[in-house]
Length: 312
Ligand code: NAP
Image (cartoon, rainbow, N blue to C red):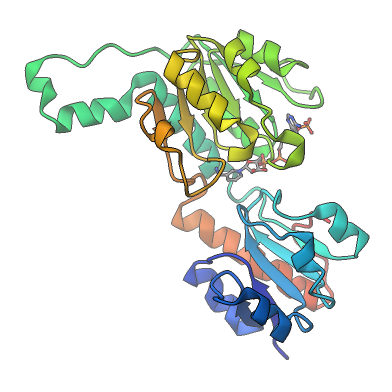
């Protein structure tokens, strides 16, 4: 079968690039020194785009690809894809839901444990030889505490199940109340006021930009901790840094940032923040399953079969 031309918008792992190269003529837009020249040369032929969850495909770029048929996202979050524009232009979009849910939920519950029990600081304490001089300070228990999930979707529910196993109570906020046994808060600020841990697991994009702002952080309060495994854009990072510096909230556990991989120096300096380099789904097993979905969605499209995991 003839290889279809594809534009690669993100740095992709070898275990994804190899099957892509077997089925497509891949043009590496991400690493291209002269992106405009690459588009002028091959833009007219491109029929597929492959990108990562965190990457962005702006409309002006897509307008230069008149034969584009499908965009396959290596991730569940597709906030970098102009979905309405794609729908209007008949371009299919796929993502990689479900296969990453358990790993991302593990990461969120690990952040809850690391922040509550001060495990990162305790590890540093022992490595520094400080145990010989005295005991590590007491931390905070999880059991009996209330966790508020912002965005009770696939990942949010998996997080809730894990936190229940730690003896925590669960509440949640989203645009709609769901048929679940957990307490619903129509107001995000009221949820923040009620909980000890506010765990963000909603999609990124314009609709949720800076949903977690200074008002929500003030409501979370000095005994509250913010956990974000969703997207950096959901949290007003400037407001968060001030809240961490001033003790407005007790701490934060973050896997995602507004301008990755750049993390503000002021946030790096916050001893009450546990910071991870966007590794939520970063296991061999899950990334391999995600890669298979990317490849199989493209194969399904170009052989006229139904898409496995369509966004639109
Ligand atoms: P999902 O099943 O679609 O769940 C999203 C949830 O967010 C839904 O329950 C939805 O409920 C809620 N939501 C949507 N808009 C909202 C808003 N404006 N305010 C509050 N809640 C809102 O998605 P998922 O598979 O759980 O993934 C969730 C997100 O996790 C992804 O979009 C991605 O950004 C992030 N993620 C991060 C990593 C990582 O490595 N850190 C990995 C994978 C995914 P309602 O419709 O009722 O509002």
